[in-house]
Amino acid sequence: MSDPVFFQVFAPLSVADVAALANGELPAGGGEKIIDGVGPLDDAREGQLVFLDNPKYVPHLETTKATACLIAKKHVGKVPASIVPIVVADPYRSWGIILGRLYPQGLRPPGATGETAVSAAAHVDGAAHLEDGVVVEAGAVIGPGAEIGSGSRIGANAVIAAGVRIGRSCDIGANVTVQYALIGNNVILHPGVKVGQDGFGFAMGAQGHLKVPQIGRVIIQDNVEIGANSTVDRGANRDTIIGEGTKIDNQVQVGHNVVIGRHCVIVAQVGLSGSCTLEDYVAIGGQTGVRGHVTIGMGAQIAAVSVVESDVPRGARYGGVPAKPVKLWFREITALRKLAERGTSVPKAPSNRAETPD
Image (cartoon, rainbow, N blue to C red):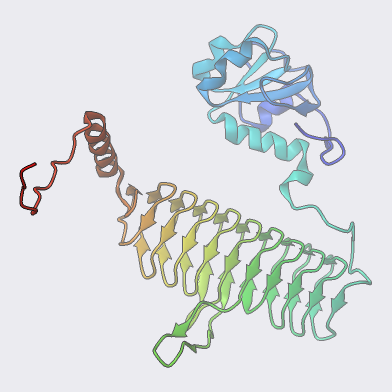
């Protein structure tokens, strides 16, 4: 439930306004009613908007006190007469559109210190270049030669190292560190993200492990979002690249020389080993590991808690350890379950000991 201390409604909307923003239909009228907030389906009050996407929650429609509901056409007949149905193609996506209009402050990380300009408690090197409208919060450090575009915010205690370039309308969260990196426009780095540190490069041997200098960069293209405490290593001998529109969850490790395409989705605790490649529109479930030098083809999907050890074709759906086509993976799981349910015992091995009479 939204807390008015943290999230205040920008301006109420009529139901007709909601339908227009969501490109929806009002089959039962009621467009004049006012929406002044949102709530969960099972706990909403009058004046609030809800949505129904998962059919599991259809029974909650009977008891909700919400004023209106974003809903797919197939479920509209189950909406009580007291609720205004707004029929949309994708209820969850429409919900996101309306939330962004009602609570625009929820689209960006909040400022930690409330600064609206360059804080007197920040350190900006004289050789750095900040365009008009840049906000730098207390404790942040901007190094020599760094360039930051207009409308960007640098959070409290963030460190932007020498020579780093950050585009316009970016949000760099508290305690973020960025070095050896070029960042595009409208990029969000949530608190604790680390970009551009050494990749894990050592020439290992009996004489000890020799550190190999990592001399590449990190390139982050426009509209990328990286979740809290994720790490992106700089390239070893070429650049680590994150493509336009890609969304990365919390606590993800991106190794050196990794190339991530456009509009990929990478869920929490994924590990991408050095020099692996994700083509455009790849989706990887949480806690999955990807081996180095592997390529995952365009539009492929990897199930959570998998290990990708070899190349994945375009458009494929893989899962398991090691990852394999999901149909094969499901057959293996089914076969193992059936063996376990049979309770088949393993034959006892014959004894090599000579039998002796009692």
